[in-house]
Length: 261
Image (cartoon, rainbow, N blue to C red; front, side, top):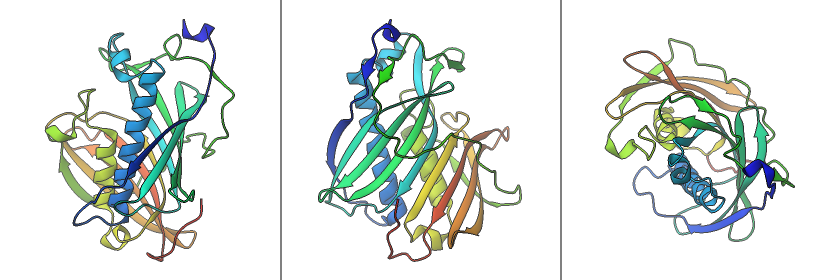
């Protein structure tokens, strides 16, 4: 059993070159590409640790992302080299916490993030206990973002509304909409003025599953906070009204300035 053999939480490192994002490849789109690479890197590290998705599927389990908190200093341009470091960062209630730090080729910090992952029973679609399926990790590096993952505020019911539908390309190995697709829908639903800017931070709570063909509505409420723009969003199943994802995003006022983490 894993919990009998503690393992040191050693960072796992990968490097990638930022691809071109084509038309509409502003800061939010480039951020989404980076977040997708982060999740792929986390998946490869989990495989090395023996707790990858395919390992868990053999036990009737899988990982689902429950929370994500990202703080952004900059997002890379096409062709720039990005270094990703990720590691297990302990446990929080039923969640396994994983942190990330991204740097540019010159060693400049681009982004830091903390995430919370739950084990899900594939048959019941309900959470499962981490023990005995996850190793106990020791000597954790410092947390990248201190967050106790409290509930995020919802937008007002009369908030602006955009509609999306889950197609085949949105579905992942767990047979539901991939978490980065919800982030994509949310960023695409942001006001045009915000989409030209660099987000300073993004918090997301993943609360439910959408499947192939489901219609999803994104409600967005925009306001002001800390000299910038704050966007509260809720992604909901159109048929049932069930909430799938809730987000809070802060945006810079000046599109050319870089935020500090």
